[in-house]
Image 1: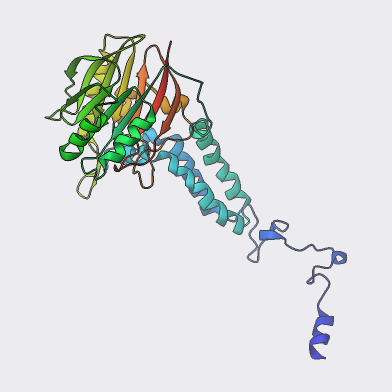
Image 2 (image 1 turned 180 degrees about the horizontal axis):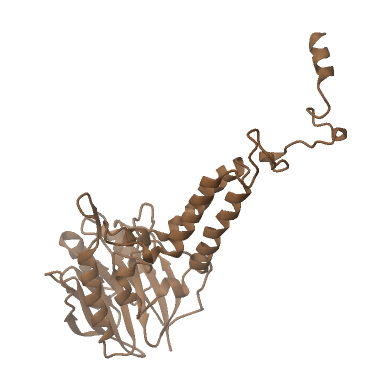
Length: 348
């Protein structure tokens, strides 16, 4: 009886009675975004969240202004730049829970900037059939299953294949396994080129490392010669004493860019593990004069490393001159810690 008496005393407003003039708060209180218990309005709540949202937008818009002087943080940011967009869903949940209109409006800033920078990569830009297909793959010196690599490359249907990090037993297995499908091949140092078309005029490209990790070759296709550069730029490492070290990679990128710029042939391909993304300012000597196959004809970001959970595209296929990419993609995983990248081209 006491419980019934208490129930009778509950006010219509507290019970959410439609006749009381007060509506239920609804999901996350979206019907009640006025003052909270402390008296703060929806425009004053969540100011810290709004600042964090604007910071994410600033990192996207002004990433080139982040200096490399302190541990090369600028290049580190640019390597994983698309992932800055994860700040939006992370901040969206507390913004809704706080019922903060200010934070939600601030989140539109990184959304718009990210969409402007990367939204085009999310669409399928493939453009029909092409004349030939190329593959670039860091096969990994520690590859424990080179036969899976051979099967994957043969299945790709590529006419031209560039491989990096060739050494020891995996290299011997790849040479014997690919011989039947690719009658022409050349290996210089730890990088190599396999082709269904004749290869000639091979010359080492000095990328200032002290040993060979880049070369240039002329591939004679049915529609004329191509200059094909195969390169493996130095690794970028995070060190306690030096931060994100990229100095050697930057020197090598400049040397490779100079070689490509001086190339006399009009049709040029660059295939390799560049240890940097197209956003990385340090690759500007190369990216400023060449076109990314993934950016022009891919579907998605085409992340290639690490193979177990790809987070960055550091393996690149680029071109300049009379070559139009019609398709770009990553291939199935093999025994390497990288995914192979492939692109199809059409002569213009």
